[in-house]
Length: 165
Image 1 (cartoon, rainbow, N blue to C red):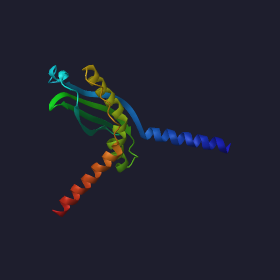
Image 2 (cartoon, rainbow, N blue to C red):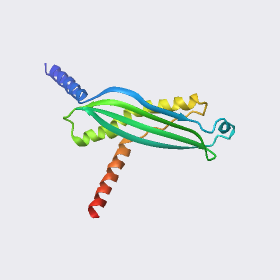
Image 3 (cartoon, helix red, strand yellow):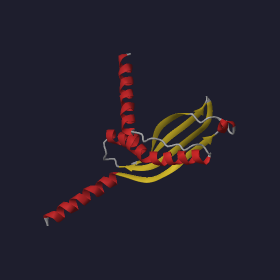
Image 4 (cartoon, one colour):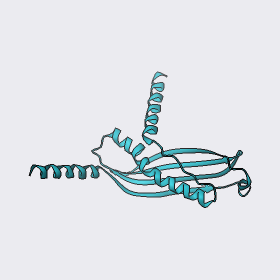
């Protein structure tokens, strides 16, 4: 009997945790691909210079519901010429309960949700690049927790600098 109560209690705790955070939908919001120097770029020796730009934006849609957009821009140059410019805005709609503290909510929309969205965005980018007949683009995983921590540290430093001024 006691074992049953422990199992039921654990199931209730898990169900409660699931109600506090839920994925409603994951979708591509915007996609762009440019290869301005084709076909000449295909004749050059492939020694790419890849630069990546990551950006996360979130919007409160309604109570407990947020849209988080992960924007990834990949620019690949060969010999100073742009081989391709690919951009994906991968988005998701997430439910986050009011009972979650503000600092934890900020972490969820700033790091946890982008971690969920990144594999989808990476696949879209890889697909666009290969369909344009460029060599495969495999993006390494991103530690969004570290990126978010760095962002918080920069905001704190800016606030301290403004307070000193």
